[in-house]
Image 1 (cartoon, helix red, strand yellow):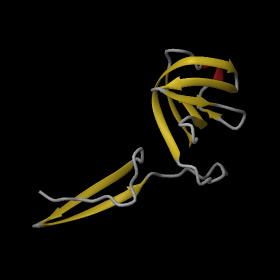
Image 2 (cartoon, one colour):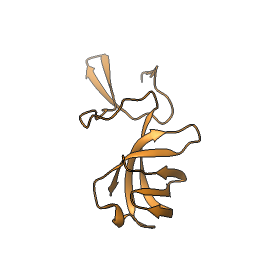
Image 3 (cartoon, helix red, strand yellow):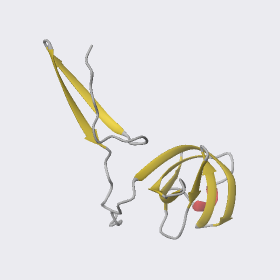
Image 4 (cartoon, one colour):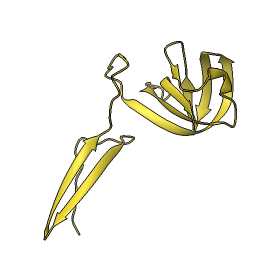
Length: 115
């Protein structure tokens, strides 16, 4: 068995780890999460996040919605990209949300997709 330390990884980070075994040696390659900058979005210092789950506590009118996914408050606005029509977002629907984590723990969504 081997001990692998992941310096620079924080709670909530998504990483991809590849371990290559060659004889008695192991090489570990870590790939950070892809940041999709091809949309011309600002690359803020705020940490990007992704959550999946069922919508609850839905309020607002498209595109300015608020709802909860896995206990996390999600806020959408006119800058949010909806992969599916915004009007299809409903309580009990499964969604995937990507966005920027705020100081209060909420996520301002940059992308919302029905899952």
